[in-house]
Image (tube, rainbow, N blue to C red; front, top):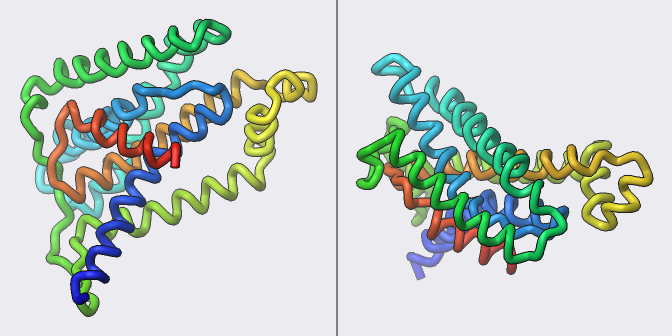
Length: 240
């Protein structure tokens, strides 16, 4: 029984990470009825975006407490750029096409993103070390929380609360709800559905970037194939 609290916390941490990535699947599917099977690779590019900031931009020896916000911003920029580019150049031309066409496109895009990261980081086939936050684990009774998990425990609920506020309380969020319910009627009411779809892809990428940084901090390593398995798990979470 002493292990139960620890396992509950472990499950909460993993579930939070999968939930952050799953948001991208649900937002895109809810608005355009598209399963973006390249979303796992968007998550992966976010992780390597964060690593790129740390390795190539920040001076050696930069404290992780200073580096972490900058790495998160870098991850978000890379992930959003990839997601918005995918929507504009890969998925938008296929709107109205048979459902098999965007599915094949998503799989092809997934492979292309893997190879692009491998080209940028030739040694990414092996796991790359991800920078870690200094400090030992925290102990609360029978529960041990690693330092890297603190970011996830804070970032996941804050991110989801901000998303709930955005969707429920802002004009753009209401436009997203209208587009999800009936895109044709939303257009008649003056909603720019193309803009809404881009925002949905961008928001999904933002949450994937947060999850990517959390994943790197939790496990201490990343590789160019990391998005495939985690993407499948997050997709399962989205379906459930």
